[in-house]
Image 1 (cartoon, protein in one colour):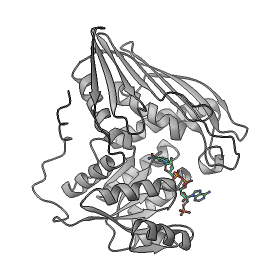
Image 2: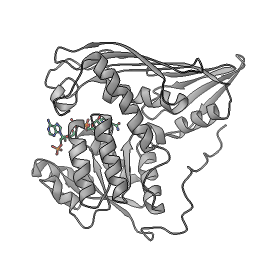
Image 3: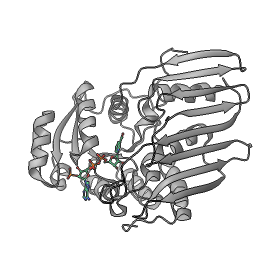
Image 4: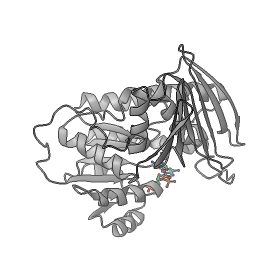
Length: 344
Ligand SMILES: NC(=O)c1ccc[n+]([C@@H]2O[C@H](COP(=O)([O-])OP(=O)(O)OC[C@H]3O[C@@H](n4cnc5c(N)ncnc54)[C@H](OP(=O)(O)O)[C@@H]3O)[C@@H](O)[C@H]2O)c1
């Protein structure tokens, strides 16, 4: 069970588009997640961050100094137009992803966009189609999909190790103190538990069961009008169901359970963020412990690098149709809950 993972299905590359030189990253934004990705990129040989932009030039400069980035800018366009940048990583808050990703693509650069890719499926389609039309690589930074343990669970389920799936259950609770100005509660800054936290559970269920045929939801909102608790039930014609729960109001286990007709798998301790352990029960009796260490964001960096060197426009691990399809489900759920962003 702990054998090396099969390589993703990329077209054979008999050459490296970059001829062995490093992939040069530019950053739009210098916030929390940007620091974690800067560290990951520094830790993956063959990659380097060469430019960073923030709205405030002094913050960009401080980030550049901390992460040893040679150039910093006080405006985003300068990173897009930097001739030494190969790919731009958009790591600002979600309402800005759509416009900024299009700006990157208009400058002829490949793009990795933090999740959610955009606020809704219509915007996501525009970004991904624009990339394809320009012959550029694009990917949503749904890093969970690049984790070795998640890929292994996908493989085991796909090979029928626990039989046909009957249920997928995923919980993603994170407790945040209610602060109307904090971005998770701020409607003008893409607030809400669903698009940020719920996207992980939705992606996990989608990975194993695909697009749901029916979706039901119960939820509640924060005083600012963004969702704070969301409980979804997805239905499939096979009879399978998925329960996808998220909240920004409580903490608890972030566990995923996959039940099949002949066994079940639990992913621990946190299915969404760098999971490294799973327990596989087969025939209700045999119990196998699966351990696959995670190098956190490095797997995502490696996947982007592999795609760029091979010259493909899309990662088979994070397909465009899934990014759009999952956002379509989240759009419908938000609509049911009455959550709409001013930028839509
Ligand atoms: N992959 C993951 O594990 C992970 C984890 C957390 C978040 N995320 C995603 O990453 C993105 C950024 O999250 P974060 O936690 O890094 O956020 P953050 O630190 O609060 O903000 C990131 C950057 O967004 C820009 N920004 C923030 N508020 C803004 C506003 N009101 N108007 C204009 N720009 C604003 C700023 O860019 P400047 O630096 O230019 O000022 C800021 O540095 C989100 O889409 C989130 O869903 C991913």
